[in-house]
Image (cartoon, rainbow, N blue to C red; front, side, top):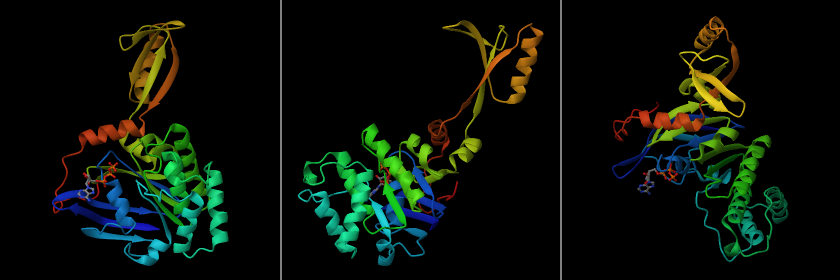
Length: 305
Ligand SMILES: Nc1ncnc2c1ncn2[C@@H]1O[C@H](COP(=O)(O)OP(=O)(O)OP(=O)(O)O)[C@@H](O)[C@H]1O
């Protein structure tokens, strides 16, 4: 669906994307995550044919992103979607349907279904009088007016309240169930963790991790074990909880858990409970970002991490 090879973008001397390689398969939800300024929007705009790469190649739906034919088959949601404030959602969506040569009755049916699903009320209200969340829903409906197979969404849930965020993210997941492919960016890693099949994590223009969330967690995250014992041991600390005192040690692997079990039993006690703590994508990201070297120069970029 999408193949990107050594894609770079410099604004003047400033390297915004320093050499990206990734592929997006048909039917997946693919997340590009990273903090402000990581290069997410620049990457998505290069895929949508809105920004010309400085170097490298991208193939989207089998086309060069600059090819107008590709744009007709794509649904792009920009980070800030300027809508025509004096129009109503209905007239606005019809206007875009006309641009794509979609018959009006087909467009009406299609966009009503999306707006029903997104719970958009007040569809005859002037867009300029709508809340940010309502405008975002209209922009999402616009991205689907041409019934594209591929959707590229830049921060679809950014700045929305928690309820609207959930509606939008659930909707993105449902798009996959309709065999659409979705590439979207986010800086909220929690959202990505819950809905993406695969992610790339970007920082300062570079991809610093990639894979499914469990793969990234296995490669970059730590699993720790909290082992509760009935007796105090040199390795344990004592915590006071609602049920009285308990003794706990935090260890990194199962061999250490086993060793604690033996020590507890030798001291006349036992292991009462073991809990696993998995690093969240957020924890992994913070550690990777802290470890990342300073940004490569445009010419000297190291590409894939
Ligand atoms: N037109 C431009 N001219 C100059 N610099 C730009 C331009 N567009 C983006 N940049 C710079 O490129 C870097 C990457 O920007 P980009 O918008 O791609 O990041 P992002 O990950 O989408 O960030 P955000 O979450 O803040 O939108 C930033 O440092 C930004 O200031």
